[in-house]
Image (cartoon, rainbow, N blue to C red):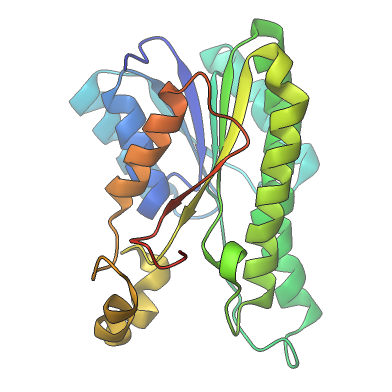
Length: 245
């Protein structure tokens, strides 16, 4: 696959799965815009890696994806700097775990605002570029929690299940303009978000048919596959070692 001269935007692109996807797309020739909410230094480091290793254009942008107006301005800024966006990866996500019976409204809203509304905001403001050029790939990073549910993650599971519904609706809306929209549902992936369960890694691995946690690069490979695919849209691709079978 060749992505030379294509423009990719990756939210939450400064670390973990987002950073792996950013580097993967850059390795295929895409120019990349890395969106971060916090951690500018990490985002700039990812951009520097992409420039040095793959000789592509890369820039970092701070933005709260839950802020509709801020995302509108972000889209304008990126279009001015890069041109028309061809690839959008909605990876930004947060957790505020707790049992539903004691979960605060703020914890529920914070997760839904970033994980689900944030993806909508990005699609709302970036998809018009794709429609005008009649070319685009949108990938929403969901989770097996959105497929199976998970105790203590009512907010997170709801947001990730919502992403699947959003994916299917957007896929149907944009298909006639040659824009695909798919979701990836990772399982337990070795990132900062799962570091708190490292002491339970053996037990988790035992529950995974393939016997181990996944790597961010394996999710990035799945993203690259969907970006290369002209005839796949509205699907949910699990990258979970079989845990959600």
